[in-house]
Every structure is written in C-alpha cells, then in structure tokens.
Amino acid sequence: MNDSKKLMYAGKAKDIYEAEDDDKVIVIFRDDITAGDGEKKANFQGKGNCNSLISSKLFEVLEENGIPTHYLDLIETGSVLSKKLQMIPLEVIARNIATGSLLKRFPFEKNQKLDPPIIQMDYKNDEYHDPMLNDEITIALGIATQEDLDEIRKITLKINNILSEFLKEKGILLVDFKLEFGKDSEGNIILGDEISPDTCRYWDIKTLETLDKDSFRQGQENVMDIYEQVCAMIVDEKDIERWEI
Image (spheres, rainbow, N blue to C red):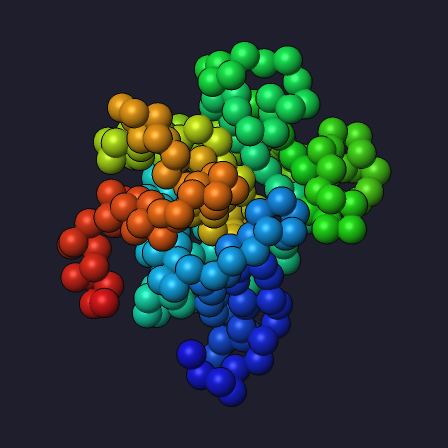
C-alpha cells in the first residue's frame, strides 16, 4: 500500500484509501476483529488476507451472475480495488435459518428454516446501536426511497440464491449474511462492503459446525484456523494462480 494515498475512511476491520482514479478506491482488509457492537476486540494475523480472498471470489461469482458490485480487482492479498460508492447507511440482513439475535428477539425455534428467507434492514449507526428499521422509518429518515428499498430486497434475494447454491457445492451452509449497498455516480444501486466470515454465518453442511465470526464471539481458540479453512474451501488454486499471489 502506497503510504502517500489518502485515508478516506477507517472502519472496524477495513480502511478505505483514495485511488489514482477519482471514481475508485482501495479497500485494505485489516486483521482486526470485533464483536458485541465493538466491545470485544482482537487481532489475528492473516485474517484480513483471508477475508480479502473470500470476498474477491464471492464478488466475482456474483458479477458472473449479473449482480453489480463495487469489486474491480484484487491488487494483492489484503488489498482490493473497488468502485467508489455513496454508501446507503443500511445493514441488509438475509436470514435462511433462525439463529443468533433473531432467537433473542422473536419466538422462533432454534435452527428453524425460514422459507421464504427473512430480509431485515438495520440502521447502520453506532450511536443508535444499529436498530431494526421498517420502510416507513427508513423513508422518513431520508435514508432511501421506497423504490430503493424494493430494488435492494430484489437484489438481496437474488444474491441469497446465488451464494447459497455456490457455497453448498463447497460444503458450506449459508445461514445468514449482512450486505451493504451504495450508489455509483449515475445513481445505480451497487453491492459494496465485503462478503466474508466477518459478515456471514457459515455452517459446515454436514456437521453444522461454525465456520465464521461466531467462533470469536463464542471465545473459541481456533478462530484463525476456521478462517483459513473457509478460505481454502471457497478459493481454488486456480484463483490463486489467476490473481498471481
């Protein structure tokens, strides 16, 4: 990473830097990991590299299936060239199985299959602890229009179908996942952020073993082993050769 590049945004686990072109940015995946609204923190060497590889592969799968994303290229392990977006402050969560916070808030049965999937939208705002939104509140806050929300739901359901099938072939059950969207310079809604064990719940399709950040939440000692395992399951050797890393 060129130290002369301007830092535009520092998140909990990623930094966004300016790129040579004004309409692009460089996303740096750090080794930091957080849970519990940022209260629990740690650093695992190599985690950022794993997430950059996993995200790059899954963005490529989505692009191949007609989903517009901000992903442009894996510059090197840990660094991704992306389109610059005006991010929409929403966390869009697709849930295929009832687990996690859903069980704390609602009387679902543990591991209940959700068919059709639940699409949940939260306000991405640390000050208000990312509260759940409905369409009326979202529109009243000026976060998005009804047209935007309808489009986001449509894209999210399509992403869910594409990733569920792809990951199933890799031996991974896609339990739920969080997406973030933004708009490009022409006002098109584009998928941004990342798709990784930090933002998804992955279970081993046979054993239902946790293969994501829940391992950190639960205090397991093999967190990095799990991230490396998921990376090996999703990213093929031919991808490594193609990316020349």
